Image 1 (cartoon, helix red, strand yellow):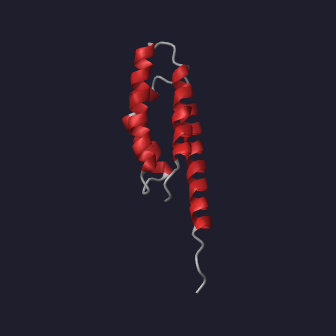
Image 2: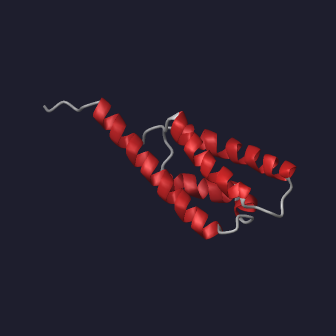
Length: 105
């Protein structure tokens, strides 16, 4: 598996940020704490070269379950997150294989 670029990681964090904005029952300080926890989980996980989409989703569901449960449409968010992660990893994999062409022997 290929490592995602910083731009791709920011895209995933932005997905979480958009969902945090929809939470009405949390204070601004609580949302800031949630965002910090999200970044502390998402960023290191996506920077691993051994990470794959399925493991990432399981990791996020396990470590951020309390935050995910507060999202208004947690199932819809989960499916959007899964789709975005798969596309980003597929794109990263394609770009790494095209930059390192294999020699025919």
